[in-house]
Image 1 (tube, one colour):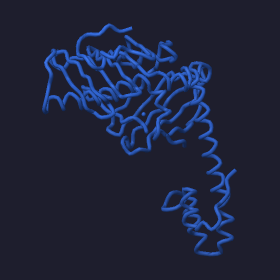
Image 2 (image 1 turned 90 degrees about the vertical axis):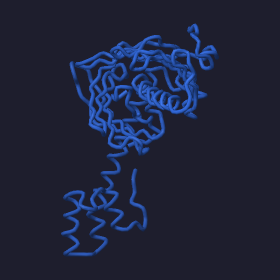
Image 3 (image 1 turned 135 degrees about the vertical axis):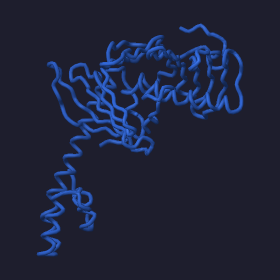
Image 4 (image 1 turned 60 degrees about the horizontal axis):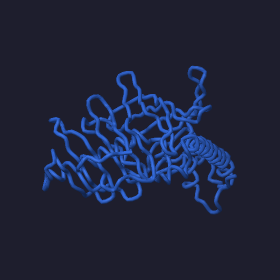
Amino acid sequence: MIARDAPELVVDERHELIEGAAIPAGIGMEKLCDRAGLAHGRGAGYRDHERRRKTTRDPAIIAFVIAPILLAGLLSAAAVDERAIAVEAEMIEAMGGRKNWEEARFIRFTFVRGDRKPSFSWDRWTGRLRIESRNRGGVPYVVLMNVKTRQGKVFLEGRPLDGAELSEYVNLSYRMWKGETYWFLMPFKWLDDGVELAHEAEETLNDVVYDKIRVTFDDGRSPGDSYLAYVNRETHLMDRWVFRLNGGAEGDYRWRNWHRYGGLRVATERVSDDEIIRFEDIFVGASLPDSIFTSPEPVALP
């Protein structure tokens, strides 16, 4: 696997899903077995090894038996990683390339799911964020905060909030931002630290060949969460993702209607058997009016 910090996977307001080998000299046999995945009852290979220990303790014989297994496992893992890295690189390039992603300072979009339509304006470099949405009662509010400090201001129908009410809205807004930006930008998030990629298989569906990439996280914040991405071998774009979360939630969505905004290419629809999630009012660029992040008043957008 290759490891990169996956975004914390969260729920939205409705509690839905909104990231050559050689044996080292002097290594002990227990560690050798561990690295081969054979120790601590991990498989039949270890049980065979235990039976051999009953008849001999000659380390040369044991090494002769175990070393090929270990070497094959290490080489196989390396091959899987290289393939996942290659698929990732082609996908990132097809979506605009790493340089354009790094230079895309400002991103704006509206997340349309059912009757929910929160809009997000995000300064990726400084962490400034503006959210315009409505609460469960249909009352409009504006959030001006920084996702790095998790501090900010909230205006409910123009009225500034404070105390516990302010904290509640700021915390909710942070979770919304994490969830909805992951829905919008998931393929680019493969570049984050803490992300683990593994090439699981290739599969042909409707005459289209896909590389299936398993996306998991090693940062401890999303244990058990797993995503399977279907990357089109011809276009190098992710056509589908299937996820299973530790809490039991599952999903299967096709990524459709890829368009270019600024220097990036993004899909504007997520389609399942039950719903269509759309992304509207999309902007990707190097500048936005500063008042977007400082004033709760409506601001004309590009």
